[in-house]
Image (cartoon, rainbow, N blue to C red; front, side, top):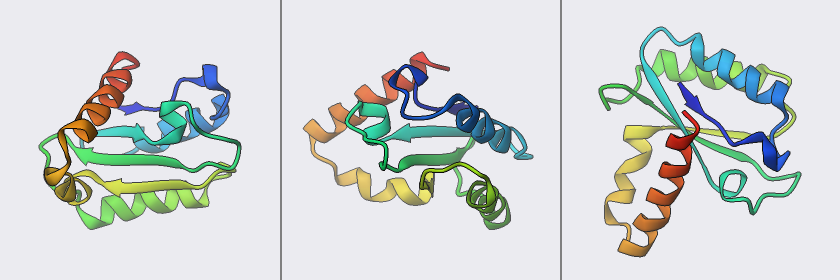
Length: 117
């Protein structure tokens, strides 16, 4: 299930969070969704985008039809912010070469996300 930013920051309206969760719940295969970036780290402003990585439970790339369906459901929704959606296994390949400091930052975000599951 999706791990979306905590609403205490007021940077993601509850109804938008609910809309995203409904979209992700409609996927016919088990998925995980990770949020990262300024809306998670607290550095966002009202015009910031929401960065999401979606991945299958078995860590294989999502079937293109499923990824495209989720992508277009988000784009066609009335969520008033830009949502950037990436397929986890495809998107994560470049992160293999991340420095140790960057990896610590990524793990800190992941820990924050997991606390909200």
